Length: 57
Image (cartoon, rainbow, N blue to C red; front, side):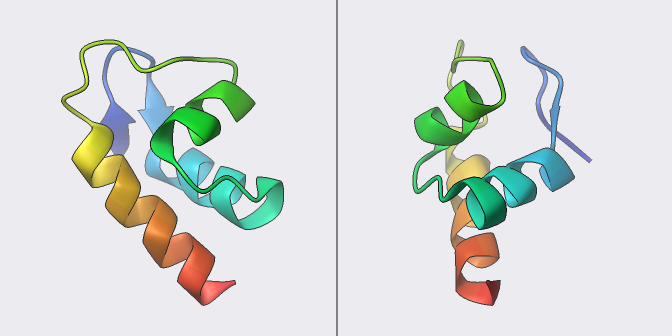
């Protein structure tokens, strides 16, 4: 599923950035993926995904 339409970031990419890269925030994850948050509509959903991925790791 695409989480961030502006940057075409997928859910699995965010989960991987959180689990492997140790990213704790949406902005850190986006930066690790070579992007930055733009419109901000995805931040709440991205936070949830990152939190789930970190808790599962």
